[in-house]
Image 1: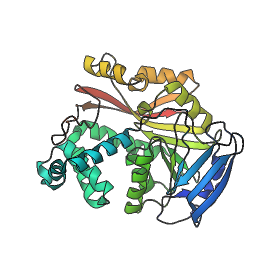
Image 2 (image 1 turned 180 degrees about the horizontal axis):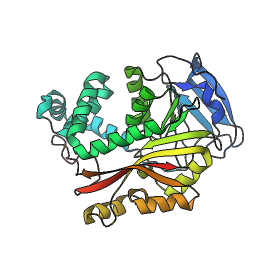
Image 3 (image 1 turned 120 degrees about the vertical axis):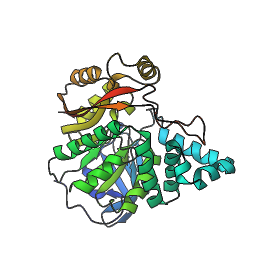
Length: 345
C-alpha cells in the first residue's frame, strides 16, 4: 500500500508514487537521484533506467517520462506559442483582445483572453471569463450532457487510498472536479509539458494541489509498472491519442481495475462534412461507437456504455480579432452527439 499522502499546497511530485513507476522505453527499473524536495514532494530530480540508461527529469515538480522515438504533436504548446508571438508582434491586436469590454468580444475571443490572463497569473479574471466563454461556445444540450457524464463518473468511483490516474488531462476540467469531490490522490497526465505547467499554477492558485501529482508521458508508452493503475479516468481524451491499438494494449498492461472514459460519438452516416473531416484529419476509431467497441474488444477489454445522453452540437465560432483562429475542429456541421461514460475492464 502507498503511504500517507503529505499535505501542502504544492502540486510537485509525491515520493509515495515512485514504486509505481518504471522506464517507459524498456520497462527497466529506475534509480532516483533527488536534488530538491520539500518534505515528501520532489521538485527537482533525475530518474535513470538501470537497464537501458535512459534518463527522465523532474523539473518544477513535474516528472517527464517522454520517450524520443514517439512523435508528438503538442497542440497546447503550438497554440500558446503562436498566440504569444502574434500578440507580441501586433500591439494593436493585443490591445483589442485585452482592453475591449468583455461583452463586446466574441465567445472565441473571450476564451483567448482567458488563456492570456491565465499565463499572466490573473487567475480569478481568467476563470470567470473562461466560464462565460464556454457557456457561449457550446449548446445547452452539449453542456448538459457533459455535466451529466462528469457527475456519473464521480458517482462511479469507489473510495480508495490508491491514486487515480487521469489520462490526457488537458486543461484540467476533470481534475478540478475530481480533487474537489474525492479523497484519494490524483495523478494528472498529459504529453504536453506546456499544459501541465499551466495546470500546476492553476491548481495551486485554487488551493487544490494537495493531492495532485503531474506526469508528462505518451499514453502509448507509459511509465507505470504492469497492473499498477487501479482506476484510470479521461475526459474526451481517447480520440486525441494516435494509434488506438497501441494505446489500448498499453492501457490493458497497466490497468488492473477499470478505465472510466467520458466519450461522445458521431452518428454513423453523419453529416458528410463531419465524417469527411474526421477521416481526413485524424484516426476515426474513437469518434464512432461501433468502431470504439470493436477496438476495445480486439485487445481483450470488456466495455459498457453507461448514462447515454443525446445532445445537439454546433460548430464553435472562430475568433473575430484573430481571423482564422478556431476553438474546436469538430463538428464542422450541426449534428447530434451520443454521450456516455465508457467503462472498460
